[in-house]
Structure formats: structure tokens, C-alpha cells
Length: 69
Length: 407
Image 1 (tube, rainbow over the protein chains, first blue to last red):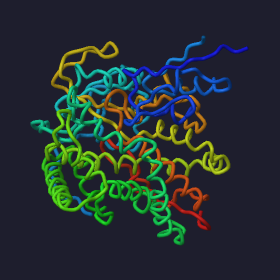
Image 2: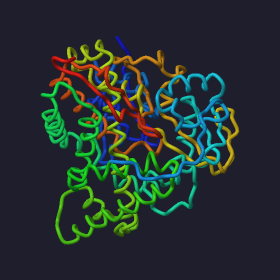
Image 3: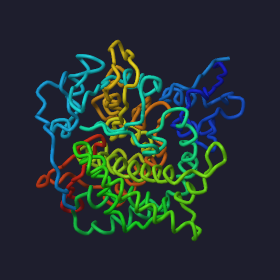
């Protein structure tokens, strides 16, 4: 069984490019300024692991951390 | 529109790009990519004595370092030009702001440009695109830059600001004066700024007695961090910024995209067959043909990618060159419309990330989608010539196309 993933958006690095929200809308929320936060506690539901890695790989600010639990 | 009379300082053709680069040189305007590829082999940062001294970071890493470094680099001047006049307060906040003024000025502008706000605007943009196509589709040909790609952002921005779409020619004239003629002729830039200021002052005055629901009103109602209304110079500066930054940038991006699709039928046909590929393709077109080069001014001595950088010089902050760096993007010189990993910097990096990035992406997507729906078969007109803009916003300003039976 694949490891469970957790994501976190570093608020000091995020500049609101919103690439993560476009690529993985289930995993990220945007605030009123368009800056991203992980949805809920950041736990990636089973089946969305690829989207988590894709969001990380496309963040221009390298603001997304994906950790395996 | 005719160019006003102007006197040009000497810009002799460049023969040594490593020590004497010039972003207004005809070779750079026509095809900058081979120049950047050559420079990248020499040094991550090169310098010219033109423009009173200017650096050009040419790798992704060097561009990223400078974009993230507000301690040694200021945004008070955002155009690399022949002259460097006194900096005016509230020139165009937040693009011309440094910390700590930058953040509050930017936060005022962010809410109207979120992806959700853009979704609400999308039907209007789709309607604009179709009205424009209605105007030329029967002709079997058009200059797509003059008839289509220019008008999509002009009319969208006018709609958002709440100013008449019929004033479009004025906006285009000001942008040309600021971003192209202004590089070499200070008086052009000053005249355009004065005219824009007078234009917007009238619209602000009108809103003091008439309620409107648009971006001008939003800015007039905004409060600064002390709870006070913004002073008029701030409102006017931000309005000038939105007008200038919101038009020829997206005009360029849509134009370069259609130019690419016109000469690359395989990509065009694949996008028509696989419309779900559009978001990925838009990012790749943004990477490969990034329109916007920004600038910084060196305020303190530092080292960038091993190269010493000294105060008194400007920096031509080429996000387009960064996006062509093969160290970061495999096959950087190829357009790969299904490129999965694309950390491009077309909208900048760091605190000055383009406020209008979500708007630009929406306009590009809609403009390409509507064009492909109505004009699936098109090519560059071999009898015409594609002309690219000069300066720091790069895109086709003349784009002759044939379509339908003539294509």
C-alpha cells in the first residue's frame, strides 16, 4: 500500500500564482487575496497523490511541501 | 496612429552582445532566443554600458535570485531606458513599490483579480472574442494583431475599470508612448503619463457623485493600513498601472500563441482534438513566449550567481530568458504543449508576482478557444510580414493570417 501523503503551503513563500489550485483543486484553497493554503489538515485523500506531486512540481515559488507519513 | 516626432540617442547595432547588449536592437526584437542561448554559455549575468549601465541575468537561477532579493534591488524604476530621471512618488504602486509599502498597496488590488473573480468575468470576455471574430471572419483573412489579439485585453480592462471601450485607441497610444517610445524619449513618457492622469482624474471626479461598481470605485473606496482613504496620487498611479500592465502584455501573449499555432498545425490540431489539454498548453505558451521583461535598480553591492553587481546600474530582469534556460526546462527551445512540469516565471517570481496573472490566463484561454472554435484552419499569410514589438513587452504587433477557404 502506498504511503499516505500530507501537503503544506509555506505562507512565507506563496505569492498567489494559484498553479496548485488549477492543477489540484481538491487539495488547495485560495484566500481572498488569491494565496494558497492546503485544504483541511493537508492530508491527501487516496487517489489524489499524483495531483499533490504535480502541484508541487509546478509551483514557481517552491512553496509546497509534500511529506510521506 | 502616427509616431510623434522624436529624437533618438545613438543605439548603434550591437556587435558584442556579451559586453554591449541592447534590448532595443533589431536582432533582439526579431528573435532574441539565439542571443540568450549564446550569452548563457558565457556568464549567468552580463553587463552593458548602454542605458547608463545595465545588467542582464540570463539564467533562471540568476533571475530568481534577483526577483527574490528586495534588499539589494529596488523596483522604484521598472523600465530600462536611456534616461534615469528623478523617481516620482506613487509612480505606479504596487509595481514600483518596495517593502514595506509594497504589501498593503498590492493587497488592495488582489481581491478583484482572484481566479473566482475571473470566472465571473469570463462570459463577457467570450462575448468580446466572438464580436471581434464576427467582424472579420467572412473576409477569409485578417491582421490578427490589429483586429483580434489587441482588442480582447483592451476591452476587458476597460470593462473592469468601468471606462468606455470606445476609448481603446487612446489606451493603445499611451501604452506605445510609455513602453516603446519612452525607452529613448523621456518627453513621450511624460506626455502619456500626463494625459492618462487627466483622463482618469475625470473618471474619478464623476464617481464622486455617481455610484458605479467597477475597479475605479473599488480603489476610491479602499483604505490604507491606517484606515485612511488612499490619496489621489496613489489611486491614479494604480489606475495607470492597471491600464498599462493589463493590455499589451496579454495582447502579446495571445498574439504569440496564435502565431505559434498558425505555423504549427500539429499543435493546433491536437488542441482542437484534445481541448482538455488547453490549461497545460497555455502554461507552455506562456513559458516559451513570455511577453514581459521587468527591471530593477541595484541599490547595494552584491553577488548574483557568482557575478559582482554594483549600485548605479539597472537590471533587465528577463523572465522570458529564464524560461528558456535548459538547466531548468528540458527541451527549453521546443514548445511542448503537454509539458507536465512547468515552473515557469512568466508572471514573475517573489513579491511582485503579476497581479493580473489570473486575468491573463483566463483571457488567453478564452481567446484561443473561441478562435479555434470559429477558425480551426488558419495559417500565416505568406504575402504579409509578422512584426514584433520593441522593448520589454514582446509580442506580434502585425500578424497577417489566412483562414477558411484561403488557408
